[in-house]
Length: 104
Image (tube, rainbow, N blue to C red):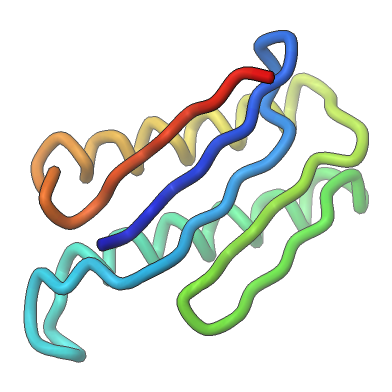
């Protein structure tokens, strides 16, 4: 299962991590994993290119983690867009992806 963990403080996204494998199909043919991977990497690339190093981004095998160092409207908009895209996949494949949003 893909696990998405979102940490919010005062309604602002502070961090996002995406880990695991959907196991929705054979390796190389798993459309859920392909969709999640595309969203994850696109999200990381957008933050890297557009936010002038205001986030720490780590990409490893089966893990994408993003920590917001100094938030602004564009960072929150990019992160919200990514979460909405992931929620769309979760609605269709609830056995393969779980999103947990925690407010601290």
